[in-house]
Length: 161
Image 1 (cartoon, rainbow, N blue to C red):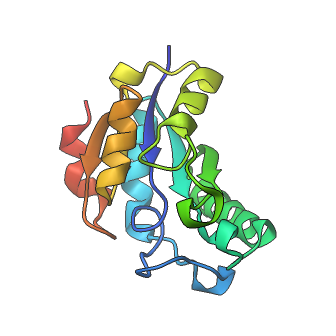
Image 2: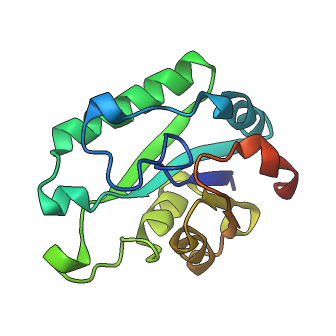
């Protein structure tokens, strides 16, 4: 079985704006994470994004705009030799769609990735800047690591075996 590092998006891979990133022009990749993610990849970890995108339910941005951001994210990391295997997102918001199983702290996005890629959850980690990220990871059997928004991942590499 494979192992993975699941990554929240906003505040982990791109700059946290304090609210939704609604426009591609505001989507700023945290370049200080290139080296750390390359090291995790070299250690044999798949890198998979798990992100809540409730702004879609609110109508604040479109799936096309989100796809532009994710394509840019994957392409930019690929240029640095880092492969992001997939980006899963929840397009629901409890005030607009009611409750769902995929929105973090729900674990459905992680469970889908675990099944699709044949991942050993017990050998995997979820890096996020919100408690709901850690909770989602732990609900899926993955070790959660809480960081500050925009904190370099290199500062927590020692927590990952």
